[in-house]
Length: 620
Image 1 (cartoon, rainbow, N blue to C red):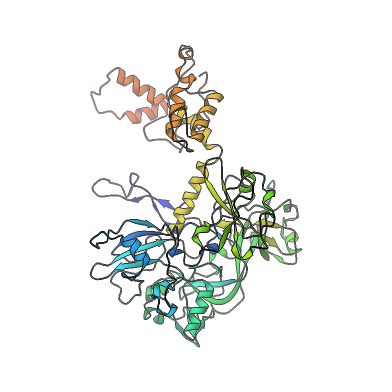
Image 2 (image 1 turned 120 degrees about the vertical axis):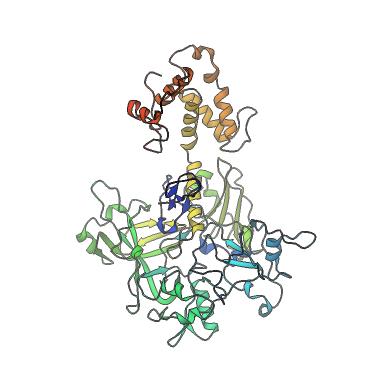
C-alpha cells in the first residue's frame, strides 16, 4: 500500500530495467489513500492534529518547513500540473526582499548581503505580517496557503517549496461541497470538506462565463475562501454544470494551462452540496463486525453527477473501523435487514446508510478524571498543534492542574476563561503529556463519531493523511513515517529486537531473563555507563548483550548446548574458508548451495530470511 517502487537502472552500473541498489521512490498513484488501522486498536494518524485545526496561514508560523527547489518553480512534494519552466505568464508568489520576514529566513544573508539559500529552513517562531494597512500589504500575505515562493528573480530565479507540517483529515464530515476535476467528467466528483484549507482551486462564474481568480498558479483554497474570492470579482462559485466546461479562461488567466484542465491535474470547487454516506459490508460468517467504505452522494443531478470510483456506491474499498461500545449486534447482516432500516438501502456488496457526524463529544469534563498518561493516550485520540503556533493570547495555560504525575500542561482558549478551568473542561482543551518513552504528546479533548441514522450504530471517525483530491508525496511520506514511529514505539518492538540481536551475537536460544534485561536497556537507553538515556539507544542494547552474565559465563561456555548454531550456508562457507578451498574450474557455489542445502546468497524467499522470527534450533 505504500506506493514505493524501484528506480530506473543507471546505464553505467546496471543491466536491468530497474535497480535494487538505489533508494526507492514513491508513486503516489499507487499509494492507498484510505484510513488504516494501527496495532493499538486505533487508526494510523491518531495523535496528529486535524488539518482543519491548524491556524490560519500556517506557512508563516512556528514549525513551517521550506525546502530549496533551485530554479524550478514546480513543487516536488505536492501534486502539480504539466507546467514547464518555459510556460509563459503563469502567476508565481514573489517575496519582497526589503521587508519580508520570510525572505530574511530563507535568504540567511551573510555580512555582505549574499544569500546562503540553505537546503531546509524550519521556522522557529511565528512571523509577524500584521503591521501596515491591509490594502497596502503584499499580495502574498493575503493568500490562504503557499505552495512555492520565489525569493530571487532574474535569469536564474530561486524558489522554495512550503512543506506543511503533518496533519490528518477526518474521513466523514458534514455539509460537504462537490469538487470535480477535468472538463470531460470522466474522473467523477468527490465530496470535499469545506472547512479544510488548500483543498481545491477556485472556479468562478458570472452567468455562463467561467473565470479563475487565483493569486498564483495551482492555488488551492478552502470553500469559504473560494466564495469570498469569487464574490470580490462580482461572480460566484460555479454550479456543477458550468464547472470547468471551458479551458480557455483558465489558460489565459495565468492560473492554469489547457493541459491541466483537460487532463484533470487537480480539482475545483463547485456550489453543489454533497454528503458522505457509509456502506457497511455484510459480515462473513465468524466476523465480529462490519467493515465500512465511504460513498459520496451529490444533491445536483445536472453536470457531472457521478462519483469518483474511490467513493462510488459500487466501491469495494472496505476497511476496519472502531465501533463505539457494543453496538455491532444490531448491524445489518443481509439485504433484508438492511432495507428494514429507514435510512439505509441495499446496494452492491453492502448496505448504504445515511450518517451524521458528531465532532463535539467531550472525553474529560474535569482534569481530575485523568488517572494516568496511558489512560489519556488510549482514550483521547485527536492530536493538537503546539499552542505556540497560534497567535499570542489565543490559548492560556492552566499549568498541570495539580496532576504532577500525569499532565505536563493544560491549555484552554483564552476566550473561554471564566467558563473553563481545571474542573470544567471543554472540547477545545489541549492536554500535553510525556509517555514512558520520553515522547511528548498533545491531545485535544474531543472525539469525532459517525452515527448511522435511525440505528444505535456508531464508530469513531477514521482519520487519514492522504487527501482524496490530491495525493501529495509530502503526505505519503508523513503516513509512512507515522507507521514507522508506531512500530518503533510499539510494546513488542524492544523484546523483538533484543532477541534478534542476541541471536546474532552468540546465543541462539537466550533465556527470557536475558531478553528482558536487554529489552530494558534498549527502552531506558542505559546500561551501566553506556547509553544516552533515550529510548532506542543501540549502544545500551549492545553493551547489555555483550556484558550480560549469559554472554560471559565460563560455566555456560563449557556447556556444549550453549551458544550459537550457525545457519547451514554460513557453516559450510566457514568450513571451506578454514580448509583454504579453491576452485580449479569456474563453479557456481551459490547454485550448489541452493541445490544441496536449500540456501543461497541473497536468495531468501521472504523478508524474514530463511527462518521465521520465532524459529528455535532444536536442542540448543
